[in-house]
View 1: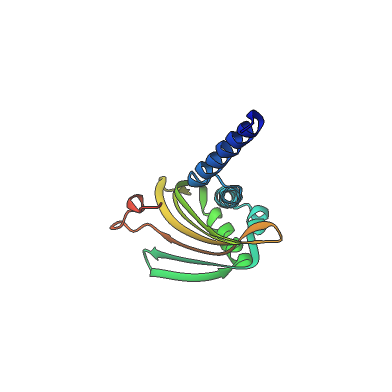
View 2: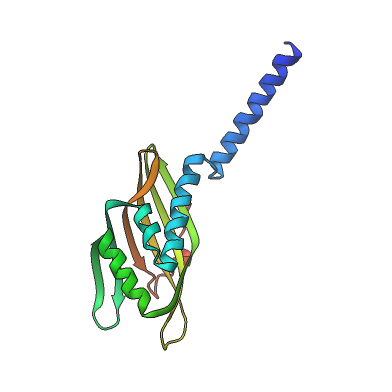
Length: 171
């Protein structure tokens, strides 16, 4: 084998190995694009950034949440994107701040569809009350349409005292 061919073969093998390692480490470009949408979603929650949230959700996406209200008990509600944005803005008005950050994440993709599971830390301070640190489990279903990943559905719930999300195992 000629030296030039040997170098090309060696280069191809190294590139192949690096590509495989990057995919195992979650480094594919599609996964990166999915994680970017996810990061935009999380950052936009902290500021109730309507423009970013409208961009990351498909227009007819649904948002379903389940939580426990101290007075009303377990609540389950499904909202459209405009209704979710209005609800979020109303909630934000009761708080001095709400900051969301990712504790754990898992991305699974098949062709133009992806599922993302997030455990989020939520630091919030309602006006006149001490800061609380809570956790939520957010599951996003995304589709790549016209070259862009967007959220088609979101299901979320708040952590229960008897089932800490920190113990949730994500791959």
